[in-house]
Image (cartoon, rainbow, N blue to C red):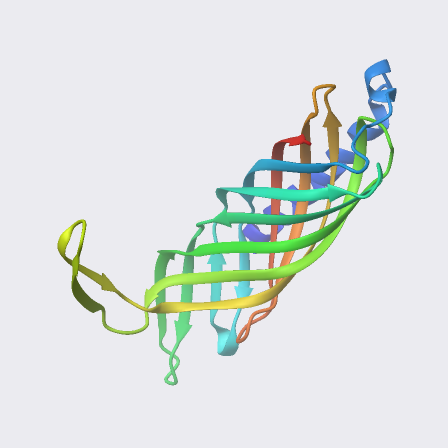
Length: 228
């Protein structure tokens, strides 16, 4: 319960700081210049810090996800200075504690690290047509979750390769799923005269899971990109 409270407080503090900064930032000559992003493509690389969260499952089972740093990229097209359509990919590998309960009520805990990949299409609205602007975002797509817990024995295969000779490799299935996800975000963007730009935002994702409550994961995102 304490972890949830701290996480929620952090989210509120981040959002408050973003909008407080917007209210006190003076409008300088550079910020007042009109943006040149209209009818241009843009791409960015980003650092992602996902928040810790808890997901409740059936019959008292649950998963506690830890905070984690990851990476991502975006590619989009500015229809005009206000509206951006983009594709957003991100990857994190948070550690987690999973609590399972059998039919007799016995509890089993698993500590591991999962792979979480998200691919989403977003509509971004830049509030101002200036080089500096706050923005809001909404989007939807897919999330791939791999628990990295084996679901079957490993399979080993061998073959003759023209480059490497006789090669053997193994593969093991794990518990994983691909599910629908959606998001909203709010942040600020600043463009330089040389077409570089920076973005900082807070994003809230929801993942529709099959056998538990929907996963709700917040993240702080910092980006550097270029328009072309």
